[in-house]
Image 1 (cartoon, rainbow, N blue to C red):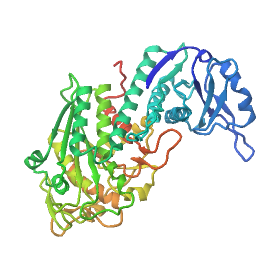
Image 2 (image 1 turned 90 degrees about the horizontal axis):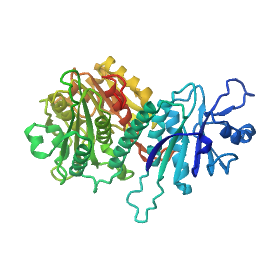
Image 3 (image 1 turned 120 degrees about the vertical axis):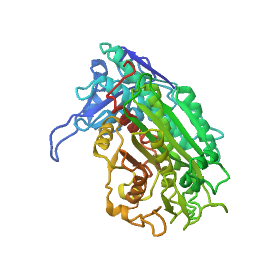
Image 4 (image 1 turned 30 degrees about the vertical axis):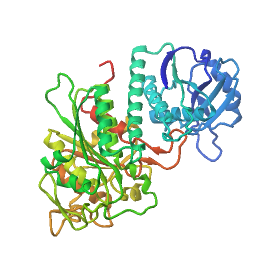
Length: 509
């Protein structure tokens, strides 16, 4: 899809579909209060074309609500699509991101191959922020998971154009739009990895894909396997992979901006289980096919560091992805086994399906050994997080309030939903082992928290954030702005957390 930015009068845009955003400006309260949708544009010709339908009450301006007008009077566009942002007082840049995705997904099945969107003109949102959000939303909306259909029809958009007022600051808008394209493409890169079936994306192939991406964007990359795990004494990581015919992959990527020799080193650690049967503690057959998504945390780290490499923030970053298959082979580890992690801690294996924390244990330790001063990990770690938070919020944990405050602030830019859950000694007690140091499950209650406490053992006192994205990394039903399948969650939030260590930057800085 070609992505373009144009500075031109809206009513003069010649396109198959012109989309304009609208917000419900209604401020009155009570049962008799009626929606008051208003177009977020200064173009009077466009406003006139939509006046009758807005006054009819047919369109309320609800979030991602759509209304299509054919041959709109006075416009050169063949169609005018109005898309709602919801209540004006609650709408944000994320609302613009979703509304733009809604525009793209509205057009695709209708055979519309080019779309122009009016950048929202609105006191509550600066044009540059809206431009970045729109670029991200368009790319995210264009992604579909039907990669392997033999008769796949290409319904992708050929061109997406963002139309901004002629008086806008051209340099600032071009930088913001370009940034949005980078972020959207990086999120889709992560989604494309998660979407791959386990027979196509083995740990080795995941390492190859990471190396190819690194070469394209200028990252240093190393991909290691079994011999390196043994050299580093990564007994926890190796224990997961030992039951599979597919060798593991330890992927390390480094982003080292020119001229930066001191300051923090941010360690991004991702779980990369390319398929999870549960091992000897095998999962039920129902929905096991979805377990190809168990490397979504690793994919998020690869997507994030791709964006970091292209946006070039002045802070050093290391990404470590621990990739393996969890299979029930005759050589697979068994419940009751004791494994020794890279740190020297001994782990009693209670359930072989609690494998993600094992690979992350050694990944966190290795990131620290490589010099990381701050850590963030992401993983589809527990079903318990879905029980606690559903498929709306992902879980977040941290051992450091200052570090987490930076992450929480990043959510205002990323628009992603994370909810912080507690840690504590009472939960840490639940994973103490009688035969070793710790065990890899803490029982039925507080499962997401005890899993986080397990990782806390290996993060130690280094400022650390853990993201449990098991409930939100896969979308079961399509939404107006995004297809069902992999969501790419955490890419945007991790990127903004990294950038928080140097302050806001654009491509011009």
